[in-house]
Length: 316
Image (tube, rainbow, N blue to C red; front, top):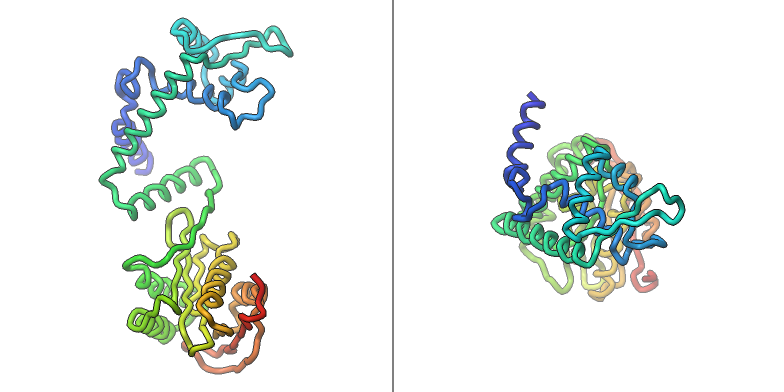
């Protein structure tokens, strides 16, 4: 079944991007030929630190692209006759050939590169921002699964969009039930925190952040008012995809920065002692444990902890 599905997807995608067209990007060149021009253009880039910038050995080009030597030779001969490339012997070994784009070749590639960007932009124009993030994440998954390419692990913090706080409630319920065996009373607590934030939110003194990893929501945190001088850190959450990337520290630091700039002199939080990773982040940020009390919470015996941070003395 998986073989048939992959083949069907390949047929669909090659049709979408025009690979089956006689000339790729309405050019006289095939997709493979355009890819060769792309590789040569990368060598020609000002970012390339090579001592012979703009040149690459034909043998290296063949290995990079996995092309048959005869096929690549015929392709380069065509490019040379079209005035797109120039050949020269390697300075270190006269038996080896170097290849580079000419001015005409650079201009031809720039036109193809621009046309490709325009076509992809047109393909994406009707796609919503949420679906674009899903698309990019799915592409990353394909790379990761098929060639074991590591994910880019890029993250960003942003204010919540419509529906995000519902996601925060849902993911807290799921994560804490799976990882800590908390019952539905924990989800009810999170629901109350979210509801209070939405009902009484003062943008000057309260804020929330969503962490995205590779375009997908993967973490959260809230800064809410306790009293005129004290802010509370609430609902720090990290999905497994966000762990080990520095996302938790970034969320806490952003929350603390906001609280200080909003005029609070102290920040507190309540947690349970078994959340070791979160505790390390709090300690690293400067929070101190001020109270600890065993009790029954969320259907379990836990040790509740209150942490406090003096914002007037906290650096940053």
